[in-house]
Image 1 (cartoon, rainbow, N blue to C red):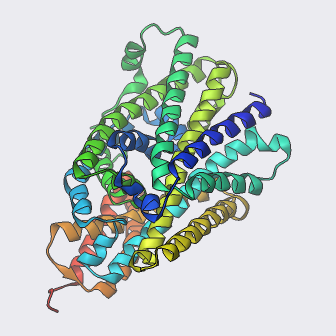
Image 2 (cartoon, rainbow, N blue to C red):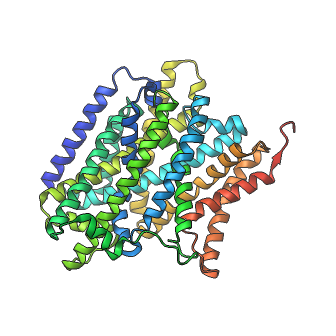
Image 3 (cartoon, helix red, strand yellow):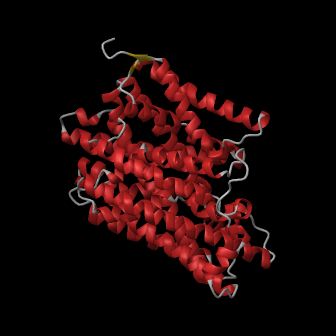
Length: 480
């Protein structure tokens, strides 16, 4: 594709999003921005959450994992089913019962103000770093295939990117995102489907399912080595806990669920979302099998994260493949980023500034708009720090991975709150939550080097357990 074609595609894409924003943002207020007036159709929320769950990183990375890990990722996806069941049956009833805007308000009711602020702060840190990392990767791709051709520097690319997200979310907030995420999920799924069909035709495969099922890369289940990172039970329980924490305890993901009309609709949304997500992940992995075999048979030296972009943008599979790959990548990236910006605004406004306790409605709205702009600048600054000050891709990836460690304390806090009746010394909670990720990191490093045991994604459970034990150590009676 020529740079001009890519530019026109991006402009048309954002033109549609801004049109949706204009329609959904009419007469919007803070309740619209934060909770979509509790009027979102559950089926739109369910479908749109697919795109938010599968970011641009996933869109590129999951197919690239197949070469080295086969289809072992499905073990984690199966674990997601258990995690989403816990969300639907335990967490959603709690959130709707308490009528929450920010899910971290629960921590104040259960433990106290320090626990509440700690939980919200860990989310803000995790989501800021995570969203910046995902946008950094996509901005790099856009810089390479488009903006370099026009001599536009990277910082301008990033600023334009965030400005466009701000432009279609600043008024309608989560109400707009429910609709834009639905459209973006559709684009992403079409992109995967087109790429699968094009590769199938290019390789002259008669039966796609037979080809995948008989392929040596299609092995899903690994029970041989309990110490290996791809061991079934390791991946399964990691998937379950990742779903609970990174969806059920994440303001970004749960804010969409809390826009449904009632608990029953939210639970229907979670049920159908789970089924579709499993199917979609299977097709991503099937695409990975096809891409790996196609690269091997055509002498293409591309691996991991470079595999999908290299083949899709090469032009060998036709202009449609390149066009839909780019459209799918943009959709996957922005469906994650727009909801991240909105949820960061929501959490900081409600949890840190507590604007819901103010009486003046106009003042609340002014503060929310300022926070929305503030986090736009924070995302821009974080991405530019990645690009110009750190620059080392492996270091940035480690920062992103360590941000994942910060969900462990949330897991420990909610598990302690839900499954015990004990109270804690609230002022000590921040210290426990800061110490837990550090201990988890040290234990995982020691385990891998000295015991040859790879915790893999299991570090989340270890992190939550350490936090839980730390809270147990600072327990107190309610009358104390």
